[in-house]
Image (tube, rainbow, N blue to C red; front, side):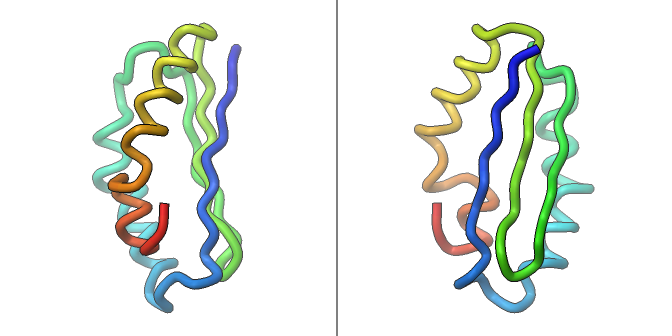
Length: 87
């Protein structure tokens, strides 16, 4: 298995961000990542006021590396980056 973690700082995020992120995880995020090729497991973690993190586990290095490259390109406009106000 091959892992990848993506973390956003919540230090300057709006006060409403904790609930917004929870709603995002159980709604659009679940729909977006369910069935993603090569993804075996994904989880979100958060320490309110500090950080929010997505952890991904892929079945191959190629699947992880492909996702990481596309995510890096899209990070500035990713849904979480838009909600938080920073990539």
